[in-house]
Image (cartoon, rainbow, N blue to C red):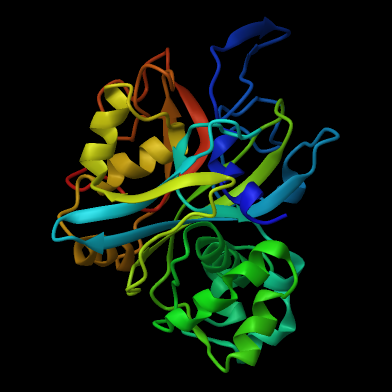
Length: 318
């Protein structure tokens, strides 16, 4: 399944109020988004590059996933978001970004001849993992499936094949080959990583990517998993969340907090090109407070907790 899992990618990170178990030390346990102390073998330093193989698992496998944060100057900086169906079995009525689980075809050797702007080796170096280019491919594919917008190519004729992606009758690499097109990955940059800890029905290792829209297509949802897609400024989206008009979880909120400090797309990419170090996000209470970044007041307060989430895009001015 494709689009159903996409939106999930941030959805599993709902936070619940922690409790304390007293063994020989205090261990903070959280159901979502917050890292349980037993979830990582290397929990002491919260390594942003930790391998999925080094994360303690239960019967729930940790699946790789990708999310696309699509930007455009309209004329102010805006981001493309979608609203999940209120009857969806997963993150019902949540406002999120397009995204989903990586599929086998995203790892296919056929992509060697179908993409430019990023080699396998460069992708592996950026994410410090094997088959990392598949995250880029999955983010593009899921954006086409969920909102009908092409990223990595200016050829909107790809949208004619959208239904084949949605129903699984054709692989993405087959579609690109048959249409004699290619994908340029150079303008798609990773900005964060979020890993679902133990405790939920699904676990994902999700990389968030950012790109500028060059498509003339109007975003259109499939009407099943998602019921609406819209462009909105990060600050307006946060205001609607604060007013209770939108429901969002911490990875989405943290991304919007970052983006609202930038005036346009160029500013975002200029900072990313400087390769800032990863920052760990901390949480107070998803339902009542925004995530915290290193230079935020109370970032190290005793009532905050380190999320299993890291970002390479700092809030501007910090």
